[in-house]
Length: 326
Image 1 (spheres, rainbow, N blue to C red):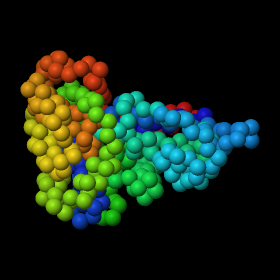
Image 2 (image 1 turned 135 degrees about the vertical axis):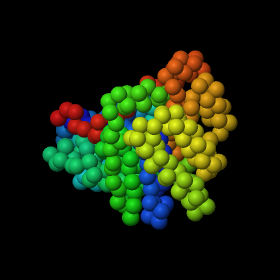
Image 3 (image 1 turned 135 degrees about the horizontal axis):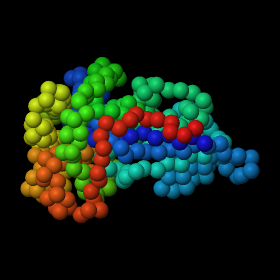
Image 4 (image 1 turned 120 degrees about the horizontal axis):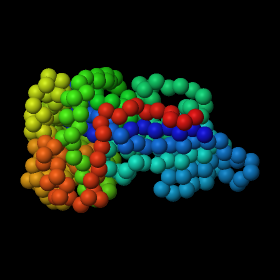
């Protein structure tokens, strides 16, 4: 039996500039951190000669398939085919929190599945190659409108400035902070679930079509990734980080009408009224989790402002994709 896990992520600045449709011409940059919430995948041998099927999958549904080509779940199917495994395997997946949540769950699942399958074949894969393979599966095989940041965050873990250039090149630069600065930063994070489930591919697809008309906005959002990095690493007041998040959210929601709605806008205003310096909806938009950045003394008021069942405590700078049992 093999158990793999890959972390989910919070993206602070630069989302949208990680799409090759933009960064091939302009370059891109994203400031993000892996968090202590994971996608887990369990893989083990399946004795197919005893059954009428050769592959068993368990996720929110159960699938029994004769070959990889018959698998309905697109990520499992394409990962199996990519790794050349067509039968005699059972796979089970689970998330620590909601799927379709703006935390990069589909990419974390893809990374965890690929990691488990390579281990199943007794092969070791470096984080860069794992990220590239996950990008290939999601974009070219599953045909999902994803950028490059989520797969990289899941494969590498940590707190990073990720830079994009050329056709598919990227560079991961760790956000180097003292333990005290990192802990202080973490205490300012407040996460709330909107209660809205959405599939990001459609929303991201609409944003990709608008890249030519949104180029100036995306350039500004790319710059914010570097500005956020400088605030953290140069010891500037964390309030500047929150104020920058607020500015970034205003730019992001203007990219496309599907990013926000009346419910999301009301939640954001409620958080700001409770004392947050800034925040944003995570992921492509339309629902999922909302991040607020607020001084610790404001958190009790934020707790009272939202249903407790929608609050998600997180730790940042989580480790990279790992095989935690083999």
